[in-house]
Image 1: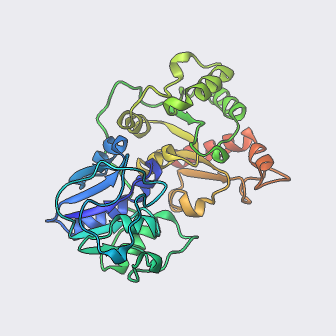
Image 2 (image 1 turned 90 degrees about the vertical axis):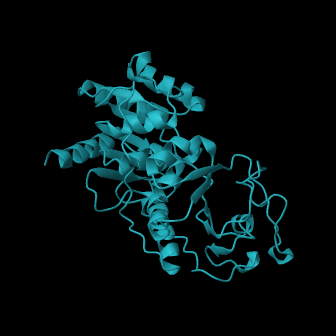
Length: 331
């Protein structure tokens, strides 16, 4: 068994797709198990090649015997809390696609072999060194390449879900993010949605159940009907199907943007504090447009890179990026 740890979110899973595919190709006869939150299950199915999902919603120390030198703490990492422990012997190979360690490395202690970034505090002196400025896709491809498993960074596509109950050809506006600093102001999203609707776009507003109030506010201020609010009304598989069949996606630096990248749907992605060079779509895909509040492309005026600069990103600049993204599809 090959156990892969990636206990994070939608964008994190999407950026690990080339690495997961490389592991599948490099070990075709082995069971490939992904340790990730259970709610990501529909998206894991769209990745393909993963034999089993091991839920990590309450993950703790490994259930197999661990050498005392591994120093496994009772609670290994703040992002990995508690556990339904998996049963059986330790895996032959464990792959840490979760982080640099030491917590995530120690979670995998006891496996026959650990593929991970070098982390002496966790007792792991094998593997390449971590690079903070590396793109998230390249990071995990480089890790596997170091262990002799070639990975194709362009292999980002997901399987297309079957058509469902949601409409096709819509423009998806996604104003939320679990990180508050990554949110463009709601009133600007509303102004954008109104302008897009005036241009003939069928706009829907997406988000999690916890973002329903935000989505309602954006839709109301944009003059959209309540039926346009899909926040909290879709599971992850349905959201993927919606994006896969969409005309356009406009979102912040969050998972929906990665779905647009995976399905090659024209998108405009609004980046705030985190540079797109680390999490943005590939530069060779012209149908994705990125506006970075801390970069020259934003042209937001004084205060760019601050909260004021992020809020000052003009709606007209986003609309211009929409035109650019859609024009690349028509050419």
